[in-house]
Image: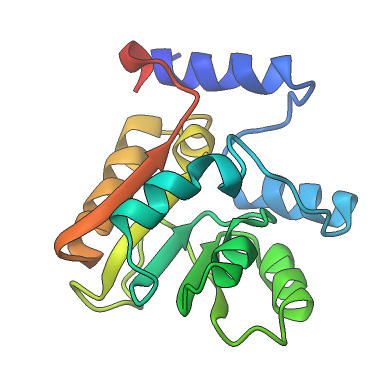
Length: 175
């Protein structure tokens, strides 16, 4: 097993979740089981706010990659952010989030695999935020390839001078 996969597997086991394998089927089952409960994985927006506000103006077009059910996008709208595209591989989750935030036009939700974001044109975002998605990818088959595909897609989508924020629990040797 690759070092990154081992680290991600160990993290999942520490959290009491031995099913995490970075696949769509896992995510679908988890979101159905949880019924759309919101979580602040890794860091809540309040802790990240100083960095986000300093690096990303509210008029920016943002891509929230592997959005899950976190409240960060909603909190960013409260701070004046006007366009946040949230993507996740789980169609169940995306449908739940569309219903939950139907009244916030600043938030869009799309089902998409982070390794292939070809629905978006090149240089179409000012900022991409990834909170934990790398760790999920590192649990799957061909983890290093999946991680590289995601990063290459982010590079393709960011405008020159764009901001890429990546939050991971993986230690440097594993990432």
